[in-house]
Amino acid sequence: VQLQASGGGLVQPGGSLRLSCAVSGFTLDYYSIGWFRQVPGKEREGVVCIENNDGTTYSANSVKGRFSISRDDAKNTVYLQMNSLKPEDTAVYYCATDSRYYSGSYFCMTGDMTYWGKGTQVTVSS
Image 1 (tube, rainbow, N blue to C red):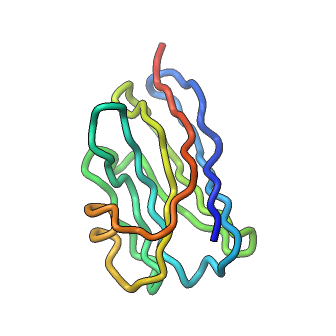
Image 2: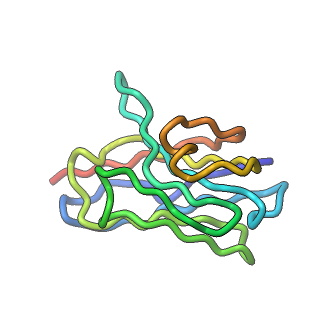
């Protein structure tokens, strides 16, 4: 099982960015996927998680209404669309996956996911 996040970069406040998480070694539609972020010196935060059984999504309050998750099973890729970006969204973003049948809120709030990819840096600054 491998995951690779990409698409990070520098963006101005109010701008948008789409991150991609390419997965391999497993069938995406049987796995829950989570996007997390971490700033040095702070705890990792679950941003958006999508459940494997019915596609229900959970979003952290800090990104609700601005970030959304989608998946393309044919391409084995999950996306994080980030709109109306703020400087406080600056972080390293990671994608993770797990095959267990837990809720998206559980995965996002605990970070208890089995497989993790390397992160991609997102910097929101003018």
